[in-house]
Figure 1 (cartoon, one colour):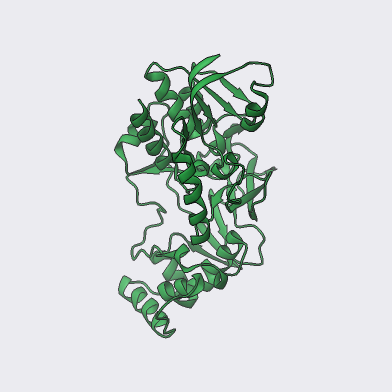
Figure 2: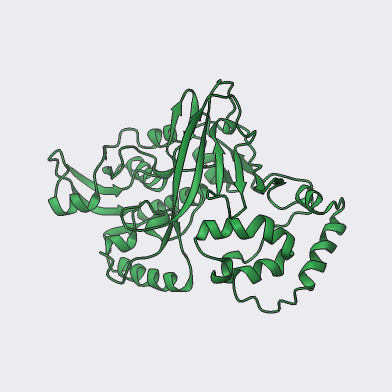
Length: 371
């Protein structure tokens, strides 16, 4: 098989790029090491419930071009992300808003809430925050920090907050309105029918080979079924450090482990996303999938999420964009620029956390440059 582009990765970035290549009359093929398409936005239907296999994905954007683009492939419901947080036996609304502050302090006006935060922050006398703990305390004070930030953040990063760099929390969104909508974006929702069918439509008519590890393919020179692929250019959406055989050392990531369970009840927690901010609870949150697109099935499916340290062989989720890793990535990025026939894209290829709309925008921008 002779193609213009071989795309490594059938996730959202790879699918958008592959579609644009085909639309421009170019020959393209896609390989992916997993046994399914759609990468981490993969959803599968279980008892009519669209299960987000790799964690909750809520589409949101203020980019009208991206919104129009994605709506070619699906229709969205009107889901609004309004997570809640549980600390011990207390429940709070997220993001931090007047409902949160009223529950915590009994305040009812924005000025009362601001004064409470201001007095707590000023009493700490933190002039130059040295770590994440001091940074958070200097923004919201001890009450919000202890109950809603400290334990959750320590679980998420696997280390105490006073050992994490301050820049991780440059700001914290404080809303002085009674508004539980987590996102400020113009457009928001969950695709009716799940995410997998979006990627299926993007890849329609494009050869896709699943269960194919790029590095095995590179070594063998052919696919497991014996198919040889000649390509002029490569789009790589895997780990950029792995592509260069960890020449400068491995980049750091955080991973996530999921425990998914089917329960014989109609409604387990009453909300799609519930965060557990107490450090004594081992998981960070529970997702109840049916609440993304409610149905009346007598069963429900929940997923507990456990944050974990990444190691080779484990799926990487979040880049650790501290100074050390940013410097390391810049070395790999410099090597990447020396390869005119290899493109890098996505959260692993560019070592950057992207929301879905940013993935689409970046893939379209790369396609425009190429074609």
